[in-house]
Length: 241
Image 1 (cartoon, rainbow, N blue to C red):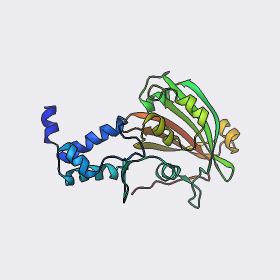
Image 2: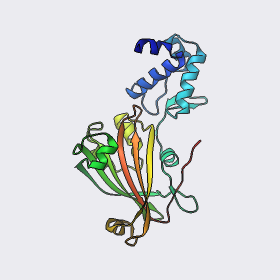
Image 3: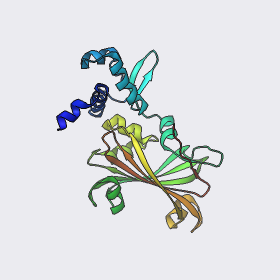
Image 4: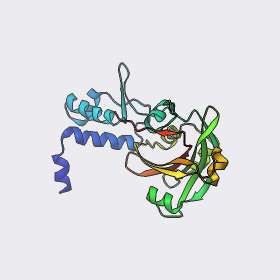
């Protein structure tokens, strides 16, 4: 039955799925050129039009990037791309609230019940826990607690602690060939607690935004859980294209 269902799929879709598998395996790394439409058409024994459609679908999902005069590359995160695509906290004037990143600490940890549920792992499993602040005009406005799966990314905590990157997803791509294909966010209104007072200078009980973000790789595996708490002058903006 499975073979019949696979055979019934359009050629371009089967080709797209195989190209995706090759990206997942690291055959082509972020930023690297993939073969041309003509070369892929010859390799798969399909028409150039079929190859073009498979590539266009992956480009529409922002997994491949088509560049005139250069060819098609595997998408990679830059600071600008990560901010535009995944960072939705802004000022009242629409400026992104992450001009600067300040790390507090990076520690090995055991997954809490909330982290385990979000990441689909056992409570107590090994994670790297990262605490950091997002600053706007030198003022801390957002605190973040990240949990990253050590079983999927061995040594990720040590690597983050050594490099302290502004663009985390770029690091995951470069070191682990993991591309964050989508995120899921839940926004909640909360009141400031003692930790918020210490880190962000808010008053106890002030209204705040809390955003839980889960990052998924190309296979749909949850690899990162991030809990953000933002001062009450932050605004959450959802964008689509």
